[in-house]
Length: 199
Image (tube, rainbow, N blue to C red; front, side, top):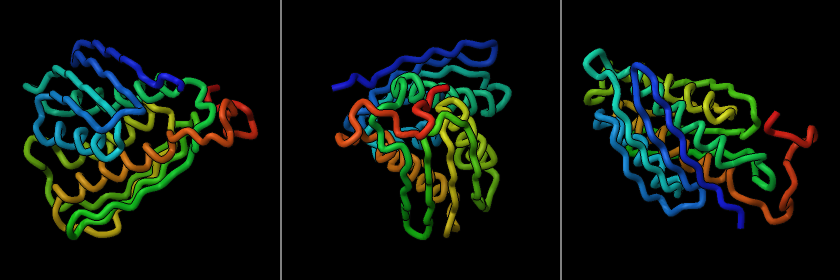
C-alpha cells in the first residue's frame, strides 16, 4: 500500500508551524494553534475525514489571529499536496453535505492540481471565541491554495456561527476523505485525460 504521509514546516517572521499528516489514518488529531476554536475546527476536520493530523503553530497572536489561521491552512494544504504525490489512483472528485443542528453546509472538492475556492458562508457575528468569522472563508481559500484543489463550499442553512463553521470543517473533511480514497479499478492511473494532476 502507498504510504501517504507527509511533514511540512513553515517558518516566517509571523509564524512557525509544523504539520504532520497521514491521509490513511483513523481521525487522531493533536492541534495547538493558540486559538481555541481554530484548534476545534481542525480537530473536527481530521476526526470526520479520518486523517491523522498534528499541528503545532506559534504565531503573532499579539497582533491578531490572521497570520496564524492563514499559515496553518496553507501548511495543512501543502501537507495534502505532498502526501498525495502524483495523485494516481484516487477518486479525485467528491462532495459531502453535513448538518449540525440548524446548520447545513456542503463541500465539493476536485483534487485537480488547480487551486480555486468559491465560498458562500453567511455568519451572524464577527467572532467565534478568538477566531474571526471573516477568516473562515480565507482559511478555506488558503487550504485550497496549499493543497492545489478546487473547492466549493455552500451554506444551505444555519443561524449559529459555531455550528456553521464546524459543519463546514466536517464537510471539508468528509469530502477530502472521499476524494483521496484509492480506487482499486484505476490503481496507478492518474484520473485525468491530461494524464497528470501535478503539473
